[in-house]
Length: 444
Image (cartoon, rainbow, N blue to C red):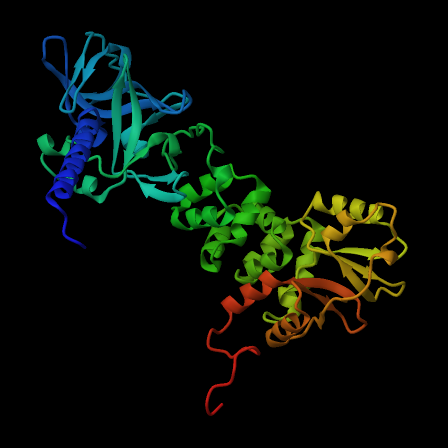
């Protein structure tokens, strides 16, 4: 790093000082929940009434949870104090503005959550950063006449700070604080609480990002996040998960839910997931699926792993030469109500493969055009269902296309292998094997 001139050095010091002052100013306006727990609660005459046990908030009122009351310990009881009866909350103590204290044991009401019990030290989902975090502390802010939860501290320093004496642990360390607006909390014990705006932010995350989050979450939090996703999107997410994590998830959720998720996955991905399960779990899931889908997956499971039939997808639309582009569009539209379509194949009267079409071919041609007028070279590359992975790779490279049609011995199409299916198979196979495109080394 080049030496700084005196002017540059002075400017950098001023910048750092200004940044420190900003952080100090922000920290000074925040109240640490962790530092507040067990703080004294005093009455109008500054006499100790009890100790703070927890802070009650509501999730269903705006972006930032509003403090609705306190739970304080008075003798052996846990009493509730409405926030309207609190005159002030500081970092070290709480003062009541009324002598009214409900001595009945506190009971959670619908829509309420306890910050210490339900959120502090629990896993949270940062939808802006697409990651799972753990709440080392929560920060309250006094805005107008109300108190709000505004930030989540996720720094390790804050965990350590809580081990210090009370006079030091109550000082916020606002180094890594996330805006609470981006945090839907997970895994709160006690009565279920509906998440506020549960799909906000989650809709913007890619399936791969959500898969990473599911892998990082604990079991209760994973089930809750999964319940927030529409079934089709959840299936897309499961397709991105590592096999070990996917196996654990499918064994953890109810068998009916697991069967529904696997049934919505791409056939080749669903077969991979089923293969990783025990025979008993696999039979249970297939028994819970719609009969047609279960039959389709059972047929694919008969192919050995690592051959063309084992990595192909069967989501294809079959056309004949005397059908029109309009007919093909209707077939695609009807199939897409239930599953994605990975391509179209054209067959003759005996069911043998003639050609394949892309979805773009349906858009580029007039609806009344016959399929016979659209087909032509270059013709699709094909492999038999028992072709091994080396043959599949060689055919795909030689064909220079993005997919291969899988055919039986009578040249009838039974599926398709997409380029990403081949990549997935290569990644999961032995990394030390030699592929057809690799040059032979000396002495080989």
